[in-house]
Length: 262
Image (cartoon, rainbow, N blue to C red; front, side, top):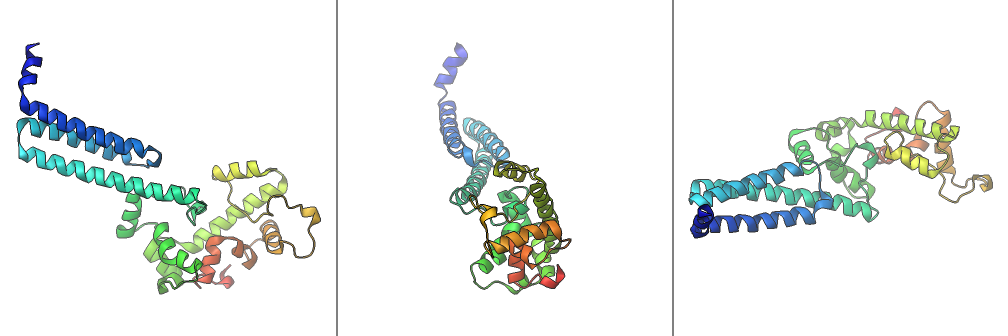
């Protein structure tokens, strides 16, 4: 009881505890309200903030600025990065929900974290976001893009992406997916989507839902039909299939990839 009474009379302790608890509530609110936008690595920043709060309490209780100042820097830095990560992930999710998913979603295992994007931008490595923003999006919109976007070697040097290899590997996945559909192993849209979600299949050119293939005539959906059966029958990719593969089509439009190289 004496200890409790001493703490009650310790004004510095009360101030330190009160300030720390208020900041902790703010931190918990920020993380709690953005829980649906959590991405990899966020937990480390939360622990850093908590460690900073512990240091802040200790520094304020002892009234030592040599501890208080570093504690504040740790808290502010970790919290700032956390908020930026939440906003980064939020922008990605909201665009996807609005019907504007990342352009090359099917070519990556997962959308890069903020740290991965920064690392790739400054220190090298696969930078799909940089390629999309600098080359692909302007090309899709009919806008101008840097000359490097028209050269596969420069694209690889700038963004760490071997596009010819990526296109070829994706073409092989498309062939395997089309063969599964043709053989009846993917009998309906649900199984097809499950196969895509598992990473075993990729999107291939298919007739729109509700279209009866038995009632098609002439050139109805000709490009789609020719591309699908080319995946089944042909050994190499051709222009018809390339036009149905977003990455390949954009690379051809930018003149980075030549049709003769298929």
